Image (cartoon, rainbow, N blue to C red; front, side):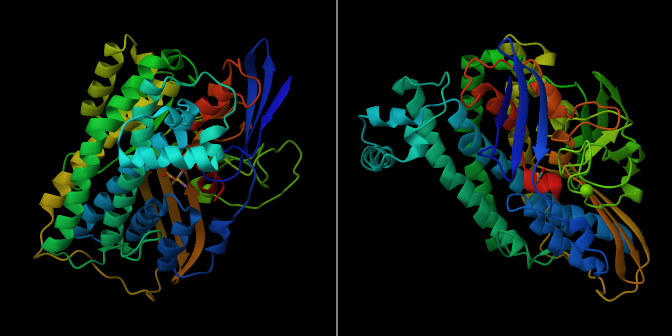
Length: 487
Ligand code: NFE
Ligand code: MG
C-alpha cells in the first residue's frame, strides 16, 4: 500500500514523503524536495561580497548560518586574516542561533507529535498564561489545540500540562534569542553585520551585558525545562530509541575553534567506524534529482535544472562521502566532542540504552539537547573573551579584482554546511552550497542507495494509518529544512 504525506507540516519548506507500507511497516520510502530555487546560479557574475548577503536568503530559519559559512568561504578567497574578535563573534552568532533554533525545534515543531495540547482544557490552576490559553482554546477552538492526526499522545493533564506550559514559555525564550541576535547582527532575520573579515559591530559593555543576560536566561531554561522534558519524553517513548535508525554514518566538520580547543572535532563515522574527515571525498549525485549531468565534486559542481528528468523524483541533490550517504546534525557533532559524547552516552545508559540507541528518533532529540547545553556554555565563555580595545573586523575592498577559490566549512543547527566559491577578476564564476538537509533528505544516488532519512524510515511501524504519526516523528527528528536542502 502506497501512503503519501504531502505537504509535510511543522517543518520549513516543501517536503513530500512517499512510503510503501506492508504488514504494518514502512518497507521503502522516498523523500522528495518539491521546489527549486537556484541560489547557486543567481550568484554567478556578481561580486563575491554579495554572496554573504544573498545566501542568507536561502532560509528564513537559518539565515545567520549561511552568512557565516559564506563569510568563511570569502575570507579564504580573499586570503583574509580575521581578527580574534571577529572569529569569536562569528562563533557567538552561530552558537546562539543554533541553541535558540534547537529550542524552537523541540517545543514548537516536535512536541505536538507527542503531547495532546487539548489537555489545557482540564487546567484548574491560577497561572495567568495557562488560564488565558485555556479560555482561548475553549472559545475559539484553534485547530492546533483541538485537531490532531490519530496517535498515542500524552493526554493525562497532569503529564501534559507542564509540556504545554514550557511550549508557551519557549515562545518567549526563543524570541529573546532573536533579540540578542539582533544586537549582534544589526537585525533579525538576515544579519547586516556578518562580513568575511569579521563582524561590523561596535563592541560595548552594554551590548555584551544585554546578550549575556539573554544567554543566561536561555541556559537556565535549557537546564530547568528543555533537558528534563527531553528525558521525560525518552522515558515515555523509549521504543523510539529503536525506531528511525539510519546508517550509523555521521559527518562532522568540527567547529567553534575561536577559544582554542575546538568544541567539536572534525571526523566521519562509517558503519560505526571512525575515520578522519577528507573533504575532497564529498561528491554530489543527481541520478534521481531533477538536474542534468553526473556525480560531481563540489569543486566542479554545477546546477542545471531538468524538471521531469526520467528516474528523478526530487529537487534535492544526493551528496555522498566516499560513496556513503551520511547523517549530519547535532548527533554527528556531539559524537565528535569528548564531553558531548560522554554526556550523551551516560544519559543513554541511565535510560537503559546502549550507544547504538543514539542513532534513532529519540537519540537525535537527546543529542540536540546535549548540544544546546554545550553551545550555550560556549557562548558564555566567548562573551567574556571579547576584547573591547581590539578590532572586530578586517575590511576588504568590495571592488578588488580577486581571482581564485575559497572554501567555507561551517556548522548549522541541522548539521554541517559547506560553501564553495570561485571568482575571476572580482566576479563569481561558481558558487556551490552543500547543506545539512541536502545530506539528510537526499534521494537515492547513482547506485540506488537511499538517503539517510529514506533509510531511517525503512521498518518504521505504521499503527496509525491516517496521518502516519510514527513516520512524522522519525522525519521531524532530523529537523527538516527543505528551503535549505534545495537552495
Ligand atoms: Ni534552513 Fe539550515 C542550513 C539546513 S541549518 S535551516 O544550512 O538544512 O539550521
Ligand atoms: Mg548545492
